[in-house]
Image (cartoon, rainbow, N blue to C red; front, side, top):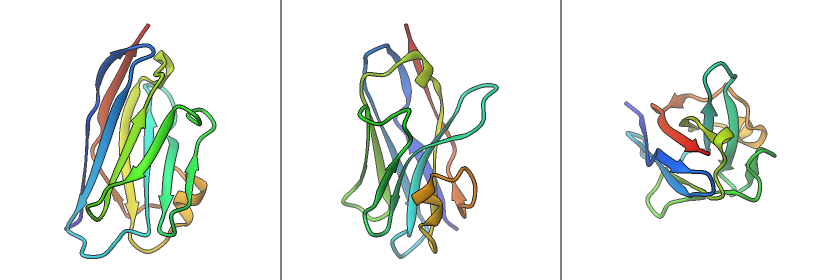
Length: 126
């Protein structure tokens, strides 16, 4: 049973930083694709950063230059370093993974992943 666990959320003031972590367990091989998403109340899910198996990284325009996604040394771990946070970054952040295809990550598709983790809340106050 594959499980994804996201952590690291919290409350910060505008301009602050947070680092989110996502760890996938229950899968012996490297995921083809891992990605971060967020969803604010009343808004659609937004893909913000994805990493394909060949190392290709895709960012949403809304976070380019402020957020950095990286893979951990441990297999199937993913981090999201967020700096210069803005109130509009407030959302529930979650991670997703697909063991077979990296297509969804390359396009930051909102759907099409085999596994999703629970969210971690990020709240940015002005």
